Image (cartoon, rainbow, N blue to C red; front, side, top):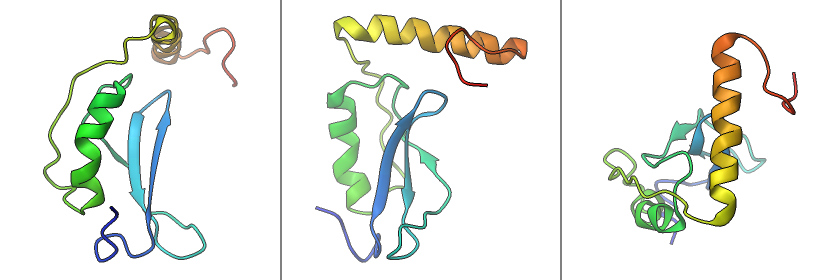
Length: 102
C-alpha cells in the first residue's frame, strides 16, 4: 500500500533500456515528477527482485532499499540482454546499435 504521507501525489515506477528500473515521486496532481532514482536491482531484474523491494519503497523507506541481484530468467530475457549489450557497446563507441533510434 502506498504511504500517502511519503508520496502525497503518488510515485512512478518505470523501466528503460539504459537505466533499468527507476522510481520518481510525483510532485503534483497533474503528473509532474521529481528526478528519477534507480532501484537497487539488476537492469533485467526478476519479478521476485522487484516484489522484494516494492513494499519498502511504497512505505516510503527509499533511503535504504536492499540490493537484489536476481535476473529475469525467461526465454526472451537472453535475447533482450543481447540487444541491451549491443546498445551499450554502440553507445560506448559513440554510435547507434542497429535498430536503435538516433
